[in-house]
Length: 262
Image (cartoon, rainbow, N blue to C red; front, side, top):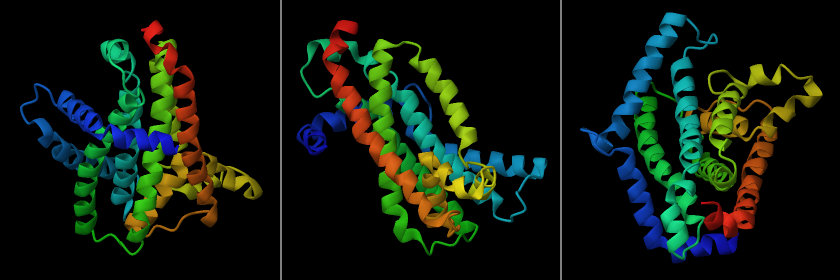
């Protein structure tokens, strides 16, 4: 892992160029361009506010809207990173075949480009939470949560970017998998509901899903929402960090064959 981060530091200029390119591609031919990064979360908050009122679905809590918006914003970073990673290698065949550079920079740049969008969206989220008077007493935990979230995205992006070179069905599998994962994660419902499905002695197993712990930790940091299961949340963090070297290992085991497959 030290070599992985060392190579990123050594090629920081190339990494910065690729991040900027990925951001520009997302808003290419758009009249408002990068401004959509700020508009999109505002529209999302308004839409979900109307949706929650129409459906009268609030889980019996007054702060359901901020609870839901935090979950959606956090989930979008993962979903966008994984979707973009599918073409990180296969969509850059010319670079892979003609240029010598650490190949993992390509999926890393997609995750970091989405990270820039996420942080700007996150700024809008913080303003919204200030307006609704959310409790920020646990904000000091946020750096660890952000780092764990990014580690999960990096690990999976490395794995899926490599897999998509050899298995073209990866794109479809990831789409279906993300949908299932979304509903298995406490994005629009609380961890208490998820844990109630299992017997009490097995309830901590829900934290084997890394997004369960990450979502709970974000809500703890931004809303002082108690974490169901307490210290079991560390199980999610352990899984998220373990997926980073696992994804990197898969990537490095297959990268020598990228040029032949492309």
